Amino acid sequence: MHTNKHIVLVVPNFKWADWDENTNWDFIPYNLCLLAAMVEPDFQVTILDANAREMDESQFRQTIHELQPDVVGITVLMDQYGPAGHYGARLVKEVDPAITVVLGGVYATMNSDRLMADSNIDYCCIGEGEYVLPELLGYLAGCNDLPARGVAYRRDGKVVNLGRSPFINDLDALPRPAYHLLDYPSYISKVVKRKAIDLPSAYPYARIQTSRGCPYGCVFCQVESIAGKRFRPRSAEKIVDEIEWLYRQYGVRGIIFEDDNLYTKPARARAIFQMMIDRDLALPWCSISTAIFKCDRELLDLMRTSGCEYINIAVESGNERVLKEVVGKPLELGHAKEMAAYAREIGIYVAANFIIGFPTETWDELLDTIRFAEEINVNYSKIFAAMPLPNTKLWDLCEKTHSFKPGFDPEKLRWSTGQLETEHFSPRDLTILRAYEWDRINFTDPGKRRMTAARMGITEAELLQIRKRTLQKARNFIEE
Image (cartoon, rainbow, N blue to C red; front, side):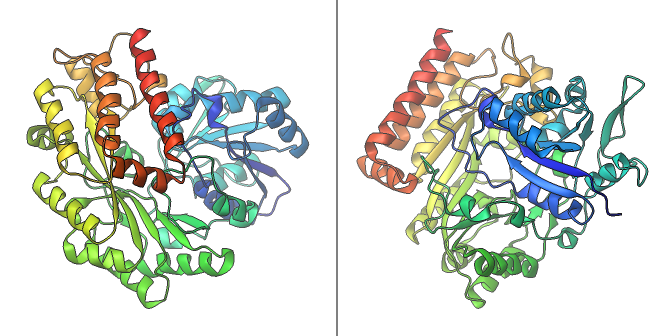
């Protein structure tokens, strides 16, 4: 089925939404490159990254006009940037209403009804799109039937939702991402204006996903709804083959493992790290989500030998009741503290996630989390206000306990400001506590300040400006 149809796959500019300038998204469109590899044999494919190119509205419209696509596929990877996806769809239709607009990604999967209420969007891909999108494009080209599942569309003016696509069982069967459709070296070599702490020290670096699905079902997380409860790993061989390909093809010298569950099966994780060592691919690498309850000293030693220089551990709460009864994470605080200390001892930079403000959480329990964030003494503590995303257990719990703040708007979710209100705390309480305790825990000690600035690749003066902006935003929120 070879056609002359032209599809443009788009990352919208995140600034078209209510953008947080202190959140750095050094983003490689891995998902679009994977989709492109699936459809490229039969369609002309262009990837347009309006975010990386910092396109304004007129530049985006002009580029769409010049490309003259038959179909535009827009990805939105999180609910927070849903408005940017809708705005991008509107801009496409302003150029030519005849262009077919398809939205996919996490936002589309979690919010298909809301998305299809937008008349600028013709089709919604629901779930994993690697096999659905080629079928949908074939249908639009008149070559095959509409996919049986994984699509929402309109028929006679009414929305028809075919449900989510089946989960892909054999991830090893997927092709390598079509990075040749990007100026890939510019993504992996550029020095961004503000580094995040979770980037490897060596440039150029690449991002790799090793699995999908999560068996743990934490209350706040959408991954179970997005990718399912069943852990679906790629093989260690395929992962290390990809690292070697990136090393030889693009000169990659650092790796970010960006999936949620690199450590779910420790034997597989060990196989990956040992293979990296055995094949002389022990590059500096970072793990943005580390299940510390799956780690022991032996695994941490192997990680360090294979090049690990940064882990982000998900602790979430410093209170045992909240951790077990609300969050649902199988983590022991004492073990997390021991493993974090050992990781630091062997030279791994350790960041940790904490969340405050769950329904049923008392003020004293909330303060337990703040105290533990200080006691665990990691290099950097990330503190979030509980954010009830649609299709999560937290959302359901908020409905059950009537914890949504007055005027709650799911399109304006922010982890930096309180979204919930209970008898124990208000949104203002959460916003102020989060901002000021984040600043106190991370930046009171001059040594930690210096290390964080160095990790981010900025000066301490620049770090101070970020701190000031963060605190000012908290003050602005409570004054609204």
